[in-house]
Length: 173
Image 1: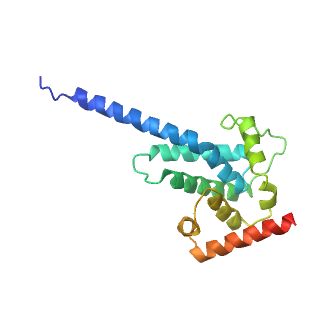
Image 2 (image 1 turned 135 degrees about the vertical axis):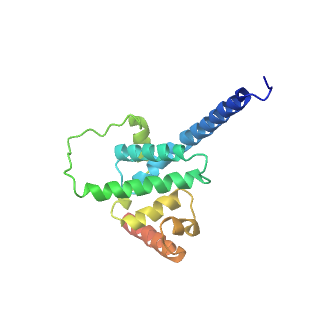
Image 3 (image 1 turned 60 degrees about the vertical axis):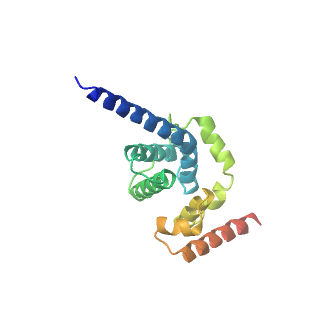
């Protein structure tokens, strides 16, 4: 039997999978709560934001080997899923008596997000576009980075951000 059998190759493959899973796990631990907050800023309820974030994380895991910028990629996927859910929600009958619990986001963590984001009530009156630009900005993206993600001109992103900030400031005074 040759010393170059399939076993070392399989071991390498298993090692690669383990490294990939470890890398993804670190990404997940670092980004999940931030992704939930990103969606909450855009108007999602914490429970729904956790569900959408989980679906986006599953999607990025499936593409982990080919995604170059996972932080951006997972936010784009989550944002699109949230927008689709929001569109469908206008056609659904809401049930106010359903609990806001989620196993994905423990109540203490959800409360911390809401407490940390005191401005959520201030941004509720903003347009969806203003909330989206604000969410990307809040996550550290510059207008030139946000523009292609939202199919906008960088100048329009800056104007939208300025208007959103002005609207928030006017509500505080």
